[in-house]
Amino acid sequence: MEIIDQLRALCDSDTQKLAAFRQFQAKIIKLPTELFIGVRNPDIRTLAKQLAGTNESLAFMQQLPHSFHEENMLHDYLICCCKDYQTVVNELERWVPYIDNWAVCDSLSPKVIKRNTNHFIQHIDCWLHSEHTYSVRFGIVMLMDFYLDAPVFKPEYLQRVVAVSNTEFYVQMAQAWYFATALAKQWDSTLPIITSQKLPVWVHNKSIQKAIESYRITPEQKELLKSLKVK
View 1: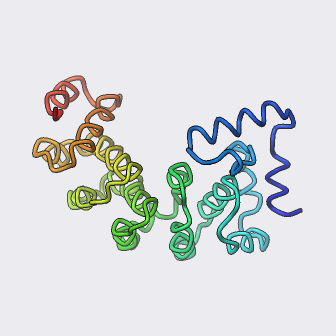
View 2 (view 1 turned 60 degrees about the horizontal axis):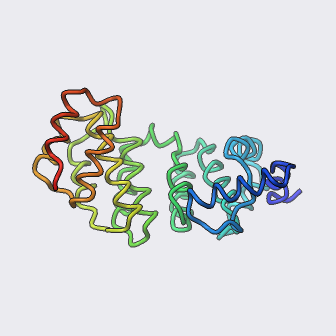
């Protein structure tokens, strides 16, 4: 059975529920409804685990671009299933330029990177300087996922995200998400970026908003952040 047929077999058999789910996905991901088959992510993830490493999956990953959102999500999960670091890097470099929405971008976080952060950082810089919106967002998400915790965190990584000049909404939202998380994990290193207003006003205020919404930020820290909003 072709992979696309395997995905379709995972759809809800109730046509009304299927249509409603496809419309819901299209609304939150902001893509046309016809690009969705209507498969839920847990089911796609399970299929990826079943297919990982097979000739069928390797052939599928070579067939770019894909036609449907669920195929893109499956591609993400197949990369995440891979345990060989260099293979993951090679696949990411080939795949990331095809990403066309935030959901696919943010679902791509291979665990093997955590054991290879010293080597992987060089690839992140290339994505941060890309003209492709979701390559830049992916680079920021990688810095957030793998470089904000000790012992790998370095204050210079914060400056790399500050330096991102791409003004696309989904890039700036990723910057705000990054700095809100950085405030929760690396308060002392991150606060000076907020107090010195080094970020674009929208990113600055959105970072503060998202940090204030976080349970990892103390009440005292939240009060300080509120006073730092730019009007």
